[in-house]
Image (cartoon, rainbow, N blue to C red; front, side, top):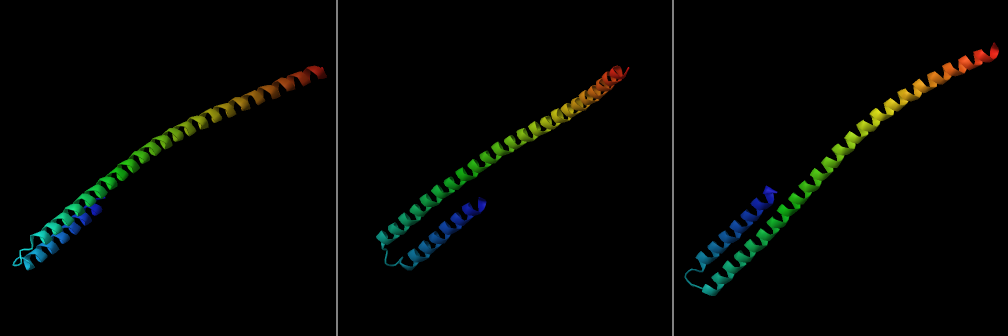
Length: 115
């Protein structure tokens, strides 16, 4: 992001340097209208560069906001997954205990029928 701003500033400085050099060359002619056109062109470039810079800043801010939202959603989903795994482990233990009790009860019933 900083690179765009630096590039724009360097571009403006280059344009101004060219304009200064051009105006120095034509200083004897004192062509004021050409100088005014150069200044207006430079001013327009500043406006364009500023608009682009603001647009880039907004894009960065939007991307950062979206990234934060996704990080938060990821963290919530990770927590939910951990909770679901704990619940699954508890239900597995409960199932094993119920199967053990069923096996014992069936064995007692089978023994009762044999006697």
